[in-house]
Length: 230
Image (cartoon, rainbow, N blue to C red; front, side, top):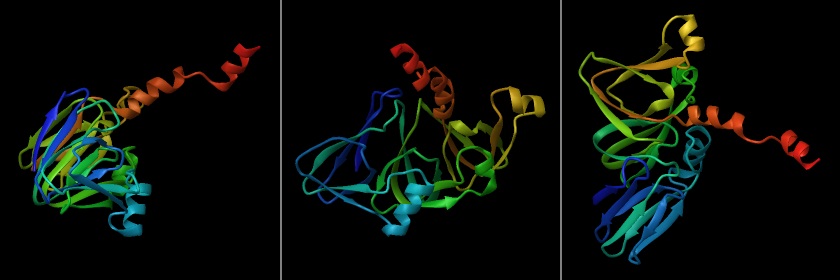
């Protein structure tokens, strides 16, 4: 399966070139276009319980699409938010992905949810993470550009929780305050995630939560609309 990522990093488009018999599993609604020789099957991968966990706990769609090439052809995919796409090749390993960042993967890669513990809850990013496990290509998306950082054994790296895209299971992490009480409450950073290598960490240059915090107060309210109508 060959791929190309165009229009990075703001409006990325993933083009997959599938040979006859090759298949790829994608997040629902991510297809932009495909050739006539590519079939799509929509299903609850992992069964009813697995799909419910992924949807309710992992923040992903209940149904997923599997595209299979009857003959060689092209499939293009894009995420819902303006941002980047990155490819990660797994070799019998595990990758943890934040909610909303999964785009597609090889059919043989298992996709499930895993409890992140109190650390992820207090980090503000939800209690559950998506777990990708197996061998093959996986494609992740972001809000903004994606930056990869490889940590050496014992090396630490601090990331704002709203900017995490994914990290390898070999990297451990903990959630802590950015500084003292004043910094935690008034710096705008709050809690951060501290990773320790070895392993790779992927971050995004924009935070959806920060954007919503900026946007929501600017949206018109029903009260304002009612006042204008008078």
